[in-house]
Amino acid sequence: MKFSEMKYQRPDLETVKRDMLRLIDEFEAATTPEAALDAVQSLNRLRMDFQTMFELAYIRNSIDTRDEFYKTEKAFFDEASPEIEALETRLRKALIASPHRRSLEERLGRQWFRLAEVQTRSFGDEIVEDMQKVNARVTDYNHLVASARIPFGGDTYNLSQMAKFTESTDRETRENAVRAMYGFFAEHSDAFDEIYDDLVRMRTAMAQKLGYENFVQMGYDRMSRTDYGPKETQAFREAIRKHIVPLAAEIREKQRERLGLPSLRIYDVNLWYRDGNAKPKGDPAFILANGRRMYQELSPETDAFFQYMLDHELMDLLSREGKRVGGYCTFIPNHKAPFIFANFNGTLGDVTVLTHEAGHAFQAYQSRDMKLPEYFFPTAEAAEIDSMSMEFFTWKWMPLFFQENADKFFYTHLADSVVSIAYMAAVDEFQHAVYEHPGMTPAERKAKWRELERIYLNRSDEFYEGLPYLQEGGLWQRQLHIYNYPFYYIDYALAQVCALQYFLWMQDDPTKAWASYLRLCSLGGSRSFLELVGEAGLRSPFDESTLADEVPRIQDALAQLEARLPS
Image 1 (tube, rainbow, N blue to C red):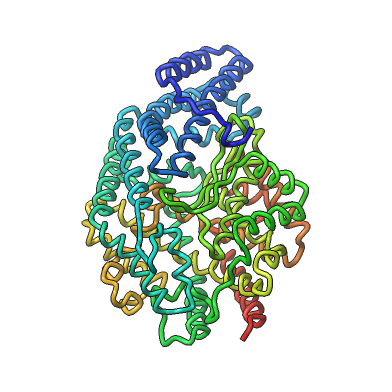
Image 2 (image 1 turned 60 degrees about the horizontal axis):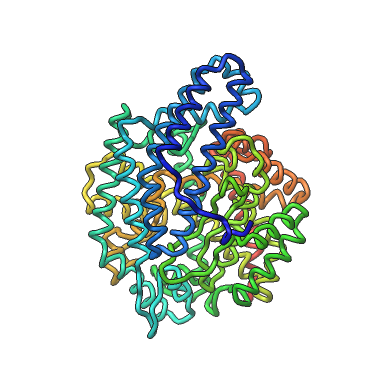
């Protein structure tokens, strides 16, 4: 069924709740593993019915945030989802306590029960109302960002569409574009501060109601992290400071030299070459046509997957007025359908967002027949391995998109993969600081962000010269994950370290690297993060020796690519 034909109908919340309660009672009363399994399967069908309608409303609201019908439906789910989670928590408690647990683990896998344990800790009936308020404030943030209408060069653009101007070879154009974009954030800075104040306060209150010291561990539990915690991520950030930050500084210095500038400013970092960045050599139809060929040639599995996505209208890629910013992949359970959402803007990112989100979608497609909805996707950091690695597995086909500028793409992609890890670590440490000290004022939060920018990104006040909003530490307000998905962002860094292992593995043995990736995708979310890493034959990012061994080889690869760049 095509996406446009998928019928949306608001669930009858009271009926869903009544049926879930009845089935949970049946599960708890089950006298045999078979009866317990039957109740679980019926519950999962009911949960997937609800999730299917949620996803349809969510996607269609993202496509046009001005659509009043789906704006109302999104608001309904903001209110209803915590009530359903309350019942799912009761189910999880029943799973944990079930006398049939061992038998169910053998049939359904241990991971579902480990997820149940961390998810149960991080939810209670007493926070349902708080969660509804949090959902509403997150929606306020997304709508505020999507409302941006930025006059520039005689036309009006949203934030996604402005990105191409930050890559202009004309420095004045770049500067004016950055000023215009952050002018929007500066104009609404108080509103962004107010929303975040509310979110931090409400999340902290929820954590304390549930017995946590603060929101940090609750945030980890809500991210379903079953085999690591804040101590491990702190050590990971220290390894990033030691191994990645110096290499990132070296990459930026070479960028400055290549551009012939006395120093880099915020409006220079998106331009990698004086004569212009690599850009797709055609319009979105050109990108999709070459994407079709790429996935057709990559493997039989990706061929079937991408044709399915095209045939069923499961991608919305063009940036439009009123469309939510950013990109994501989600999954519509009852249709066994991944969905890719993006905002093409005429830059290199149009290709990488297609390969990145297609990595998520390919994994979901490969594991679409999993027995449990929790297994359609793995936990976030493992899911990002699937997406970031797909970006590297498709390198062979990048000349289709960039033609004579393919070498520019290769260097930019690998270099940006390195420098982005340092930024991800800064975002993560910022969130730890905020939730460990929830009484921070907006000014104190911004000061903390500037401190971390200096540590991880080497950004002096000169870097933001003439832009007081950024000099004072406002840049983080553009990072939607900080508002929407607390503690998510380090997942990208963990996954990037794994994806770079695949990049290096492909140089040595591409056949085995691809076989490992297929195995990883087929497992879906049926294992924990570190179990999936081990099953794939990758090294743990938490082991400092992984980065210590990886970085010199990445440095050599960058040097080889740089030598191929046009002078």
